[in-house]
Length: 226
Image (cartoon, rainbow, N blue to C red):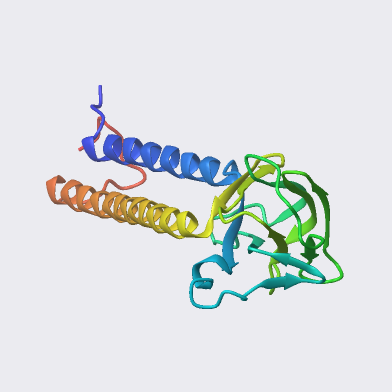
């Protein structure tokens, strides 16, 4: 009975491992949730710190004098990373809230990247709720601006299927780690593939070297003939 060659077994096992790793990587990337990235920028104007030098200093919005006003600008965009499989999101609802009621000095302003996209906001006592529609890769982000009497930034939350909300800073750090992980796995798969091919070539050379030299049998020769 012929014994199985170690080289052949190694090739089959290595190929199976490579196939499992490739399928697992593809499954992870395909099932990776859509990432909606955002940035939050705050600008606060207050008259109180300067009133010791300028007693008559005031901040006026329309006909109303205020002590403090904070403008919060939140920008949203779809993560266009090369590891992202889903590059379109039909609709996402974002909530921009403070822990308690706030005073809105102006109406919430919302801007879509283009006329093909959509955004609408509903103002309420503790902030605003906005619907982002037809989210795709664009040159400009969705932009929402609020002017309130709070010096603390709001909380931003998301309601959307198979989608996660992530800050731009965390997005960059996570993308760096994931890119590195996928890069290492890719190098491993390539090394394994070429290693298997080299092993196959070495096994073939060894097999040919072990065969004794001799003349091949003629077509008409039989086992009992000289």
